[in-house]
Amino acid sequence: MMLAAGALTGCFSEQSFPMHEHRLLRLEAQQPSLSTRAWTAAANAKAAPLLPVLQKSPITQDDFLKDGRTINVYRHFGYDPDEIDSLLGNWKGLEDTAQVASPVPDKDPKGHILRPAWRGFRQVEVPVDGGVLYGRLGEPDPRHEIPGSYIVFTHGLFGTLDGFDTENQVEALRRAGHHVLAIEMRGHGETNICHPEYAVSFGIRESSDFIAVAQWLKKTQGAKRVGMVSFSLTGYEALLTAWLDGAKPVERFDHVPLLMDLPRRSDGEPAYNAGMFVVSPPVDLGTIADSFEKHYTVLDGPCHSIFQGHLVERMSLVQENPTTSMWGWAMSELVRNGWGRSYASTQEMRADFVRFIDLRQGDWSEGVRRMENVRAPVLIMSAANDPMGTAQGIVDLFSRVKNPNIGVVMLGGGGHMGFPALSADYYYSVMTGFFDPQRGPEARPVRELAKAP
Image 1 (cartoon, rainbow, N blue to C red):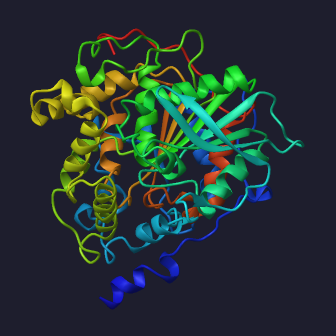
Image 2: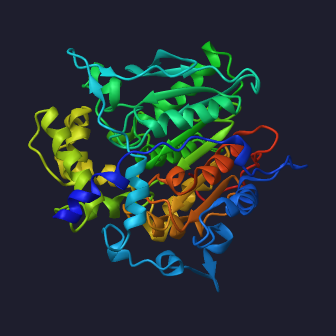
């Protein structure tokens, strides 16, 4: 118990990791511009010397196969997957994760979040279908301004816009020359406080929200290029958005009650034509949800235990019977969204929900089909020691994806979203370089698909 208590303080508390521009290592402009897949490999090689000396070198998609077979990413980096969420087996991964976690925000007597002002930012309400999302819109550093360039910045599940990590990252993007729109999604932060009726929908409505946000920036703010930085479940939802807004329209779910309102692809350029930088997405979401059927303590699964505490708290707030099951919470949120009325039973609704979220179907053929439809640049950063257990799913899926618009880098360390804690210099080198219109990647035409996306 002394060890568990110590894990919640000291080195496991929030830390600040700002960007130091003079220490970054970024690619020079390439002629012709590289595809995202090629760019990711080159940018990683350029920035890798900034990682801790004892870190094993990161790998990218070309390294995910060995002798024609997908590697075991845990064996490659020297981790025991059964100990990936334990203090003894993955201390550094848990430490990196904890040091970038959103703190619990202070609130005023009316329940609204009290957060300090950010330099160059103002509060905004962004209209989406059926409501608004709350956030902050920041002006770029005038010395480096990229005309018409906007980056949408989000948070992970149960996160907010509070904390050093969020402020440091939006400031880094602003200093790199971009306008930055930081938003809080349905069920999170000030959006949830003002509109608790907006339930989480795991990408069903969030994908429409993302596209609406990009369109709002283009129509009302003069945006010419829009990018996104997203994390964890929100990052997974960003991948779904990139698929739905892909080269071909997705029509095969048009008559599924749960999925009838999925967004249509944007005409012309993709909504996020500057690309998406996606951090620690749980692409094997069903397996991860299954792992929460067991109850965890801080001793046998600290990351899972904290997450289950959030589940209980969230369900209590909406006056539901608390559960530590992710599936139970997900079904509760879908019912709150109103879809329960369209189904004879929760089991039928769950079956359609699984069809939507499960990229692993058919030995990952479902995930491959979706990712091959992506037409905007997408860079995914993940860690082998992510205590949420996301690493092998990333490798299993993207070892099969050939789309040059998707680049993946798998690091040995960084935990869940904790790359600024592992090496802020590496992280900001890759992130700011990705969105640089001169140094970054360029989208490639998507090849014809054998099956509809």
